[in-house]
Image (cartoon, rainbow, N blue to C red; front, side):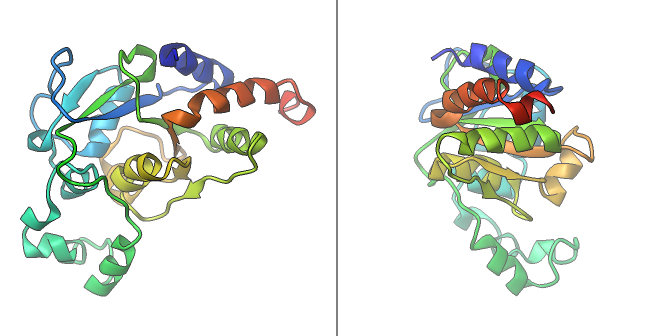
Length: 228
């Protein structure tokens, strides 16, 4: 499957301003892709890929506990107790108290630890690997069309995300469930990504991507979407 071509089709059909990002989990560190220099957060890595960079990262290059935990690169038990409990988020104003953090975190999926050693990021139009998840930053209308295209031939609905970190909701969740996910990002990702206030996020499992592109093309020949 030519994901580069599909990525270009998606950009053309929806007139996306941002490049869709290909994300792939890798058992071994790839030899033909550059390793990220320094540390950054998982969400910041996505912005780097949207801006044209192709690279991979290991646990050593992950700056955020969430990114390391939910991508499956680091054992959560290795973090200090204040991080394991979520207590550090209370004085930051993300949650009112520890019970609220714990209840919220119960809904966050993560990739299982000790399976993968690296995560690869690239603009989809340039990716020379088969992605696991395609991450898209778009406006609300574009996101609506993607979700309609997902339901067009299947009747299935995507999974909505709210306050959970995007390293879980927009990466681990579509990877683990095989379902399209969508949301507005979380306070952390909004602070560390170069995106507009009105942008939303959609993540598509690679197994669903070609079907959704085909549906978008067909929908554009129909009355409702021709008139938009």
